[in-house]
Amino acid sequence: MISVIIPALNEAAVIGATLEALLRLPGNLEILLVDGSSDDATIEIARSYPRVRVIETERGRGIQLREGARVSTGDILWFLHADTIVPPEAGDQIHKTLEDPKIAGGNFVLQFNGGSRGARMLTAIYPHLRKLGLCYGDSGIFTRRTNYELAGGFRPHPIFEDLDLVGRLRKTGRFVQAPGRLVTSSRRFEHHNFELMFARWTALQALYWAGVSPRILSRLYPPAR
Image (cartoon, rainbow, N blue to C red; front, side):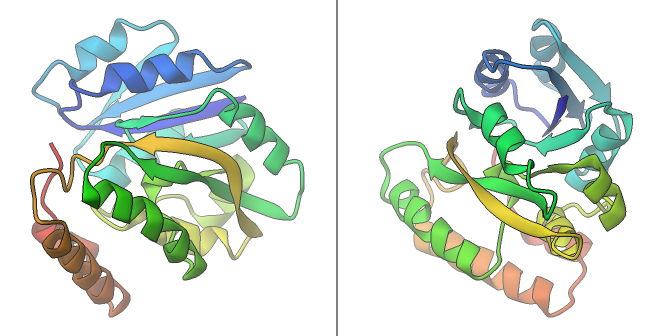
């Protein structure tokens, strides 16, 4: 079984479409929405869908992801953002990818929606980031539970919890890219100067690799909502 773990905070505008796409997938799927104290209708919307389990926990993406993994029951863990739409073949591609015991986990090709220049540029940039070993949570990270636990699981970081986990997963096996394409929201940089947003993001990356605490960096990372 695949356990899909979705951290959420005030995602009422997008969570319905994400859950509907997941519920159309064939196979045995457990869907957990881990809410970090939303004050909009996120929880009510999630509970209106069948087969969706809502977990309420402390705010913080690393904290929420860690708790979702802890209470999940699947042999495979799939971490998905609340504003990301999965293709119909995604579950089958995860199973096929993990048939190889040398593979610890993987993610998907990512496309940012919308027709803005920023969406097009970031869609084009992402494959090159992967060549640098940079794989982010919006690309739908998946792994076997055994590899996840061997790697130590998510740490309670408010930002860059994804890079931290993938780095440790790579020590337990190969990390590959499945052929499916996820579509995620470009809302973070819509109506903003894309070059300025990208420069800030790049600077945060550099500070992270220089050893600055993710808790400090999260104060410089604007919310998308």
